[in-house]
Amino acid sequence: MGKNVGGIDRILRIGAGVILLALVFVGPQTPWGWLGLVPLLTGLLGRCPLYAALGFNTCPLGGKTA
Image (cartoon, rainbow, N blue to C red; front, side, top):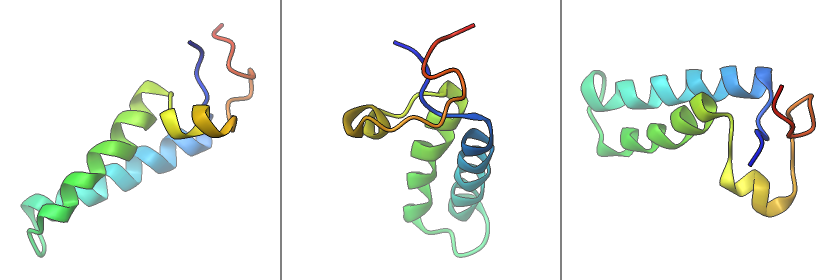
């Protein structure tokens, strides 16, 4: 299984995940912040199951690992 999440997409996902997770510990301390785990993990792993299901790919290598 190759990666399907490209560089900028990964950076945005990791940033959004960290911000959402911060909501659990600071700010309004809402449990909705745990949803930040999804973009954080998909950004760190470079693989998104939803992208795979929809046939979408933002990786410049076309899903091939170098």
